[in-house]
Length: 219
Ligand SMILES: [Zn+2]
Image (cartoon, rainbow, N blue to C red; front, side, top):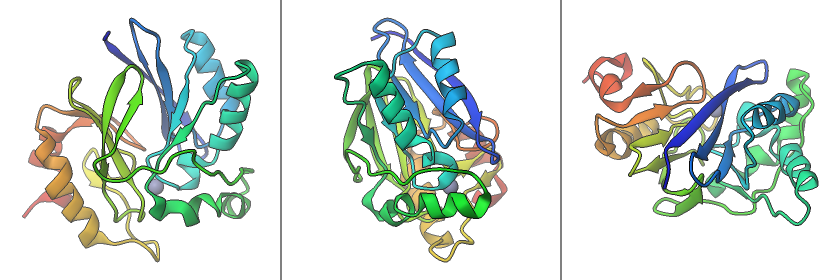
């Protein structure tokens, strides 16, 4: 297993951190949360000579998942015969993925509904970018949000669960602040202070930095 490489491509008017991950030795690669701007994602793949074989979704919000169907289609067209499965999120976000087209219309951003090839559940593992990712179901921001954790690289894909100095918003009708804080305290923080993460918006951070200074995690 080689070094884990990452490139962040901000996508959609929401500046969501679409993340391209690959193993430096094998070249195994994945795209995480392709919310839109698929041309820009494909250009970044070409610039780094990376060929992803799967797409991962941390949750079903439009800025994370709105470009997934188009990206899967265009990657399949580039590599005939390749499945390019979409894995994640948890099934609790099915209603969001079924409503992407309508949500996109609301914001004036064209997008398509998407059906994942595999739903993820707490405790599952995902093979992507040449390593094994553990699945943590962390509802609250959305019912089906998942965090993906590479225990070897000490690296997590946080989605909109935990940000640098903030947490995911919970003011949607289906939001649940208590559930989100509980998931962060019982599942995310115990991963370890040394764990670095990429989140859906804004700068990357570490679990230790957030445990010490995130105002939402004060007792
Ligand atoms: Zn979100």
